[in-house]
Image (cartoon, rainbow, N blue to C red; front, side, top):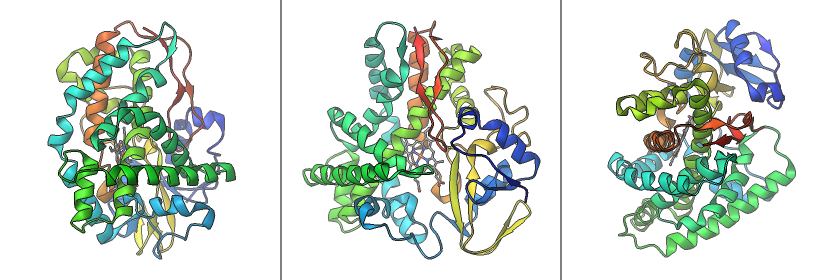
Length: 390
Ligand code: HEM
């Protein structure tokens, strides 16, 4: 296994991680990433194999390490998140959420999402302006708030709590960030607990459904809250970045016009998601000996699956840096694979298809007003600001 160094805080890497991924892939499907102190999988085949391998799991073989007292509130939510569970506990909770997160319910949100997009465009400020706060950020948070059945007016608070908590998933968390994440988790938990308590379990929103499961003894109160928080956090952060990256890509390639053709919307969004994955790295723990990409992994080892690298693997996607909607063949890795495959993928796809189609239909002359700035948030990838004129 070739050992490679690359700081995830290096501004050139954050702006464009793909040259490093290409260099890594040239040494084989698995490299040792010095800065993370673990093997990293960079080929599409290796990433998919790892995500689907039941000998690998999100949590270490002897469970999550205990959270320090200073992170007790964060830990209370985090330890019950679907992303911190494996095996039967994960299957039970995921099954419960999937029951309430049906494709029919998701598809039924279409007209509401479309109205929201139009309302936001009607309120665009004068040119030039930043499209992230004006369009990309509000759509996912308002949609997930409505799905859960919490008021739109709570969006700003939800965003602030979510940002504070999500900061914990990045390398090199500062003590002040950890404190902020813990306070956000405590406030978020208390607020949602009150919301759930006030809910009629026969209601039609997701929080009511979770509350009904709680009354039936299927979920505990902490599980209801942890699930609602995960849906809010996972449901908006990645989608905001995906929207920003896609809009910049469609403007710079001149491909936005494709969205005016109904039969090309889905392919265009898929190619946006492939070429500009918003989440780049997820780790797995080895529970039983396994071999991936010619490397044998022993129980206790941890490895990184580089989703962004897999999506640009030329063995899976010929000429991977070219934007070519309608590519046939292997699936993209942006939503993961296997038992933790993104539960919100149908919703994220629907939001993106509607938001991009409406934007390019209403603003056919949209252009970049300045070079967009990538945020220093690896292993997420997204724009800090996306200045446009419409
Ligand atoms: C473009 C937007 C999105 C992207 C790129 C994305 C990506 C991902 C990925 C890669 C995973 C798997 C993590 C792993 O295997 O370790 C995941 C899991 C998950 N996502 Fe998404 N996601 C998006 C939007 C959403 C939305 C809108 C929701 C919900 C409303 C959502 C809810 C979840 C949940 C609950 C999980 C955990 C599933 C489990 O562990 O069983 N995501 N997402």
